[in-house]
Image (cartoon, rainbow, N blue to C red; front, side):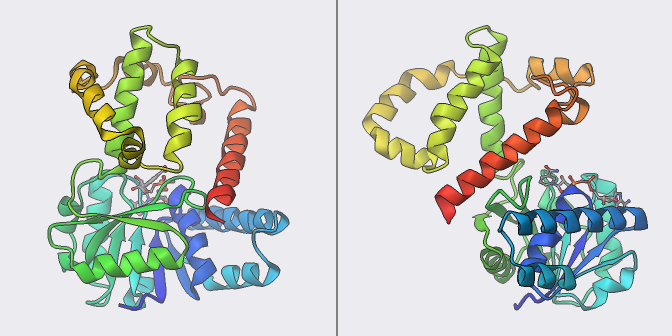
Length: 310
Ligand SMILES: NC(=O)c1ccc[n+]([C@@H]2O[C@H](COP(=O)([O-])OP(=O)(O)OC[C@H]3O[C@@H](n4cnc5c(N)ncnc54)[C@H](O)[C@@H]3O)[C@@H](O)[C@H]2O)c1
């Protein structure tokens, strides 16, 4: 399964960024969106990003020309008829995705691989709308896609191994770190870990055991710092499994095991405080703070990426 020609469906935050990455390494990358205005915005965003990358020395003039030349933008369905891979990045809404898969199933070739970047919808449920569910798979990227190396590859019950291998190889080709998740479970692997940590963190803050700044520092300067280099199983091996066994014997029963949305999150949600995008969340992002926080975040991610992987 040689993937040469790619259609990225959905030109929003994830789709446009992902297309930009594919186009660095491939000659034919089409961005499809049902609205022309979204495509125009995506094109502007990509061209700005390419300029920024060139100024930062991350992209040569030649690479930039290849990238921009490899990309095309369309609202026409006929782009699906000749591609090797479709990566769907439409809004996280089951009926929208289902209608899309039903439509493209009759347009793509029989051997075209169809992947979804869904954050959490079931791969098996989505597969029911795809003709030929054996060529359907989850390809879950992380935001911001140009800075986070990981891609989770999630196999549905009917996904062919060869399809998973093709997406794995593609991810390696575009300089990402792919990990295969063998079964379609809610949250796949990364979000299960992320929300297990978040549940405990919010429980401790709610109980007044530690401040919100304190819990974020515990992660940034301790656990997270370590996790950038070692996974939790490796950390346990270095810590000593005897020690970790003894800690487990008294600590597991004391950890938060609530099945509900954490209370603190609910309060912010109900107040319309969604975080950076609304100017308030657990922290204040009013004025230019949101922009500043995003800039600082991206600069740190980039430094970390260079330090560890280049
Ligand atoms: N943003 C993230 O942090 C993130 C991370 C990983 C995965 N994802 C997943 O990636 C996918 C896209 O997310 P996003 O953040 O880019 O969203 P977004 O809202 O920025 O983009 C969604 C795109 O879907 C298009 N769209 C909406 N309704 C449509 C319809 N009826 N028909 C055709 N196109 C339609 C929109 O025009 C837009 O281009 C979602 O499944 C999301 O869960 C998002």
